[in-house]
Length: 264
Image (cartoon, rainbow, N blue to C red; front, side):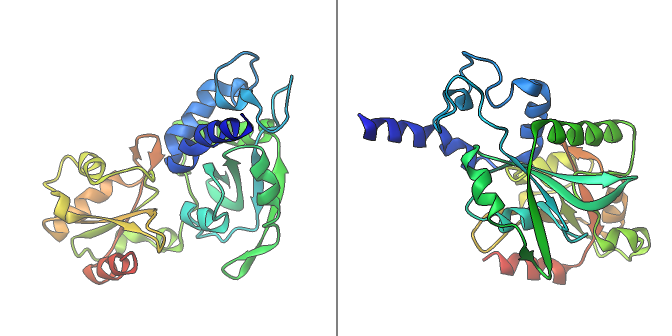
């Protein structure tokens, strides 16, 4: 009987770790608001089952706050930092349109918070990262600020701005190749083609990059028919694919080949 319950428990959480698209999940968090993670008794949502002993009360909200992140940090970097844990959402914190070096990370279930805290003061590149427990109200406030600024037309996006953005990417000479950053982890080539539906693209011209574990990095390269087309496509910079802001950068065939070879 105990073995059967454990098997059932494992099956309930399996989908959380496999499905890695952040944007739609964040929107679901917003839509469900405080009832998320078991706030309403009798709900069929999996966290209400309280497999870790939270009987008669909702489990604590499984989120942590990170501080000291590199200013060119990406979601892929955060996923790598918490390698082995189930990440539901990564929310980068901005102030006046600039990345603050902080982020909130929502985990698959409450028990994983303890494992995430064990990464406190571990390094991401040359920076050591501080990891703190977070409350649901803190996360929702950060989400509300992000959504409010996005609707208001602020230059803020879902992730921090890389140096290449601030260095004036409009003045870069185009080679016909663009690099995309901030893609949902479940995005496919057809989604990218739809994003650039005003241009003639085929699946052969879309290159989604993967890390050494075979997981998507949230980046892709697109080969356009001409440098003029790639320059015109820059008008899509900071537009949304699903609920995610996509950053576009002029690139080259050399950078494309290097990125694709790394994922092999």
